[in-house]
Length: 254
Image (tube, rainbow, N blue to C red; front, side, top):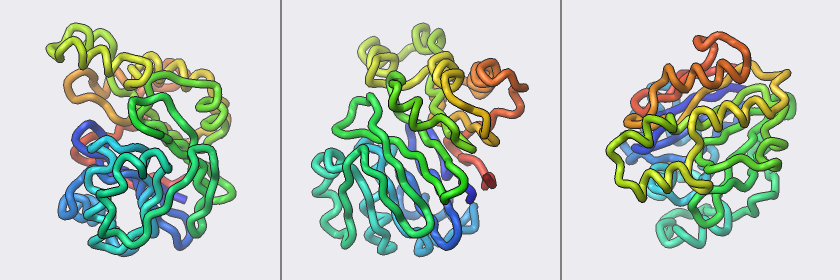
């Protein structure tokens, strides 16, 4: 099992996971040509993707999904709430499937376990994806942690974890006050210290990879995100990976 990122941030998100003969994409916030170019960087043909899993309806996650899925004949999976919010965009897509935010399902060699998260969307989820031996936890858009989130992510072999902003940088920055409130609110995004606290609450005994994701280009820095997560794990900052907007990150094997 392995995973890689097409890019992560407010301008677009996409994460590839594969095991055996199965390859899925979590979200696609990029245009058709941009997404294909980013996949090519990883050695992937779009037609080889079995499904796109959508976390929620915000444009940086679902914006490119309808056109990309229609162009390449890819199945799309989203919660019933997300489908209700954006279903009209998938009129040209032949295979669109709804699911409940608590119900696991399988796509080829991968088991998909969604879990609901507090975020300002209709029925937002994040995912734990496994191959029967290893588990990857993905958490990139959440305002505050819950016991169910922590239970879902405990014991994973790899984590992609939101470190959206540094609280001080956000407070002192030039964003409008309502936007600052939204980002820092309980339905917004995790700051570095909140992400570190969540990480410290998990069973990390199996953890082989941790990647900080969805970093704000205006209100965070990779060094600040790395330092916060490293303190939680009592490891050196260089062990913490970063998913950036332009390049995402290359393949990591679990």
